[in-house]
Amino acid sequence: MIYLYYYNNTHKFMPTWKTKKIKTLAKAFTKIKDEHDMLKFLRDICTIEELHEMANRLYAAQLLDEGFSYRDVAKKTGMSTTTVTRISHWKNHGEDGYTIALKKI
Image: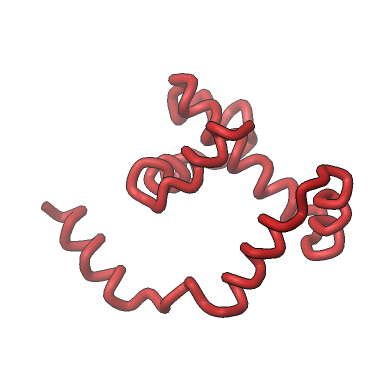
């Protein structure tokens, strides 16, 4: 009950995230088919830290899919259990992005 209250009330105030700029970014990602070119693009657009963080989040989602506990995922990734919980939340209640990506790799 508390979760639903929190979820419903926090999402009212979230700004729209599917902006024209984000859609253009998504289009760029989908148009680059070559892994080498994608790595170049990722390196130019993100810091090394951002790249490692995104890769680690995907790895955490993989581990959760394989049945690892939050605590085990946190140990393997170096993330806090709070971050692992957040990844699990978006994996299970988000836009299915993690599921789509994990099926393709």
